[in-house]
Image 1 (cartoon, rainbow, N blue to C red):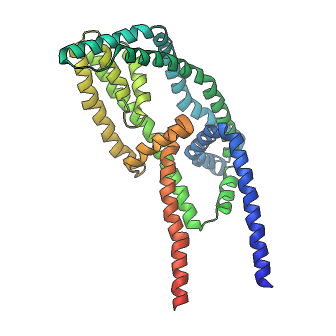
Image 2 (image 1 turned 30 degrees about the vertical axis):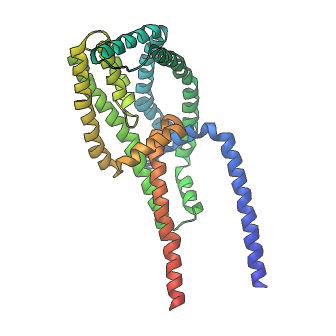
Image 3 (image 1 turned 45 degrees about the vertical axis):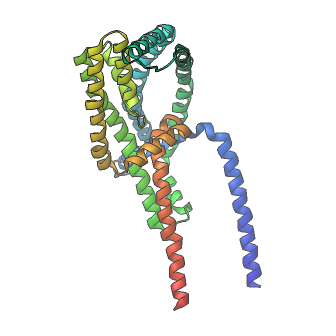
Length: 348
């Protein structure tokens, strides 16, 4: 009789889980486009929730007003510099579209000069033309992404407001619903907090530091429009593997194409020697201090994150890998060790 009741309960539980999973898949499919906004809201919540709790619980400020104040501060600190940088770059993107033919001809001239000096073949004119047309076609998509970005930002702050106002209740419910021991839930919470702090603060700080170092080099070498290239360097430095080289290598190519060989060589030496070294030093010091994250986790995490979530993947890509490794450890301690203890008891 008891076995029959257990089997019925297990069967009901199984079907109930299936229904929950199907509904979760359906909701995820329909709301996938809002995922970057949700991840952005989670990031800002992790960065600001302690301030929220301090001001509302210790200082007795009103929740709604405090949430709006913190959101306003985050807009000024985060969004205002990004908006100014995007405005500066958009005019240059428009210029690049209008003068893409000139850029292609300059690249042809550089390739021809190198081929004649070294007596080698690098690329045909047809391939260079394809590269130029490809760049010209991709640049308008960068400008067209502005509306999607604004929509994402709106929903991000819309979600963030309710997360801040209901923060304590939300965290308590999460602790109740996650089917793990309390110490393992705390491990996950600590890992998420560490990774978000490491990437949300560490990566932009490293990129800005590289941009400042690069700006000094641009001014010394005599690069045209150094502050524009400073912005390009800051953005490129946040990308994995190639990083700031996406900025200073094109500068060197332009210099070589214009016959400024000495400046081009100086740019490459300064770029790989100083800017690249600064990147390595900061990644192994600052990021290790913020969160002891392996560099390979960061590199592969960013690559995965960018393809899955877009720009916010800079933060959540490494987090996915770290959480995967952490869940393996938790599974081992939560179930395998428990099963091992049961087997030892049975044997004794």
